[in-house]
Image (cartoon, rainbow, N blue to C red; front, side, top):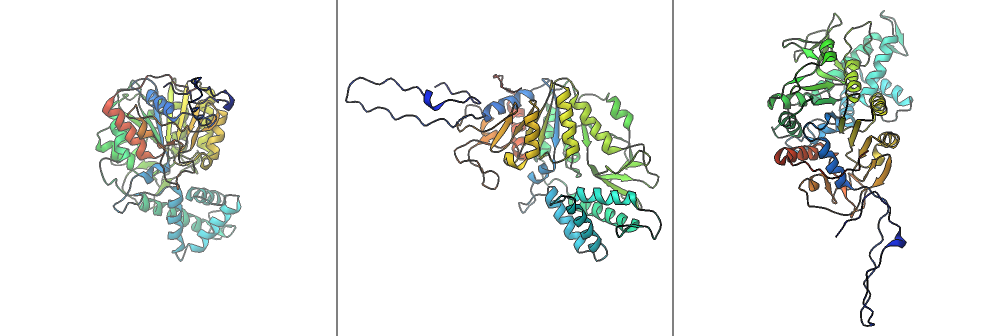
Length: 440
């Protein structure tokens, strides 16, 4: 039976009736159910994704957001590393138990909330604390709104140290989605390197790539106390088999030294400050600005010919990153971004807004997608002729993740674990579908 085309509205009045016998003894066949209206086909999206990831077809980049961290579980079945909301809660609880900092921490949180940010993240608070630090004098009596430079510095250090303590957890097994991604990078032949952008501070990507023997460059050069090499980042002349890892929001092994230099090391030196969310560094503080240097790599990538950026675990809540993605897609018709969303579309309003403005940004959520600027739910037709289909699409999904009707298809690849299974499937079969795609 020829299936109906997805993404096309079928008027109810045009449903063709089957030819019926003319004898009066035959009961007419029941009318087929009315079609659900305009929909997107998730299986086309699956085929399109596999085509874009095919060897040497496009320049591939992965954007690994905070939501990916929660896909790896500990022995009790809980996320090994919490996403940003959970991380913020743990940091706040720690500060609430600090007798010296509790009052000041609450005041900082209240100030951020008063700026029309009802549920501030730890990054929102860090950014505000550092803004106050830049305005506060250096003298013992200098204060700004009740905060002294010493208190602000102590808050900054306490928050960063607690973040480091929370996310400093090694991957428990060698078959996590991070390991699958590393294996995929290693096994798929490329003329151009795979680039990974991440807002995560943990070392999961580094651990997975090193355990899978994937060479990578993260902007730093050296071993004992590696230094940031902006020239090597700009020239980008390493072999294509070397992955590129760009940690946009810093890392738990980046340090700002007393001489205002930036180094990468697991070792902690007294007096040095962790560079987590290092957007506060100014040019006159350090010529090596990791935050802006890493963001610039995203700009350069999106200017590349025939490139695709695949996001997972990112909810499009960072305006700076959204602006760079939007600028890159607007200025390069050969660039594409596929946003994998864990929950429904209404959980990522900024992402939906962007996708409605940019035809080369495709948003794929549990309950539907925005394809070619058109926002629609998924179809209800289930297909199983391709082994990749049940990895990417299913009808059963917990109500905690989606409110889509039970009979509708659900997109699964917003879960980093499911995306890892699809990459593993591609590695095992190497059969990339060549069907026609309706991608812009």
